[in-house]
Length: 222
Ligand SMILES: [Zn+2]
Image (tube, rainbow, N blue to C red; front, side, top):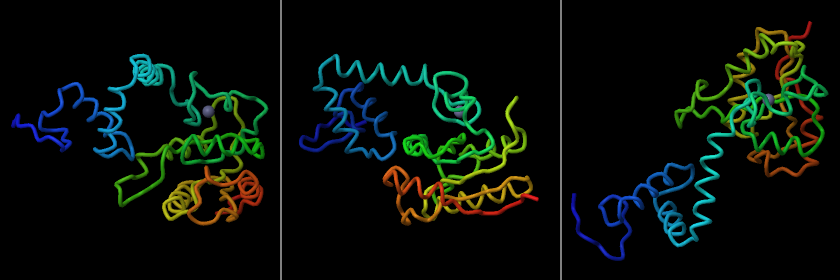
């Protein structure tokens, strides 16, 4: 509406920036943890950057959308229908370790202390933020326990490695309840992880101890 320029003040909505800049700022501001201010800083950084650098970022974004997808089985990131971990016949397919994000999976892989397979939830339950079970891949996990993928053995253990905080605990409890009617042991990483510690900040040795010392949530083994 107003075309008036207010020098010294940043504004993304009043037309003080030409439209491609406004569009870029608007798109950047949609990213998690990026407020309007940060989006503006990023946009001006890109404006000043070399054409090659700016193009490299644009290409990386478009490649990720074209080449990277979710694994059909575990929702890990992959460039093929299933991920290398699910494809590896040496992995123990009777044990599923459940993580919130792919970077948690990478941390646990880096310890080398887990030989089973994974399931990536892509988040945790956060009722106050409106994140419910439907926003996660929890249903697909239950379906995997109920019906193993073709040529896979029955699942014997589900290890919950959601973060040791209120929401991670709530998510673990929800999944435990969903799995109650199946003959599967549900365990949770040991509390070697201090409360509030995210998996990706935990030292490898602490993470390994947490995996080895996992404790039963419920046991339906009979
Ligand atoms: Zn997979």
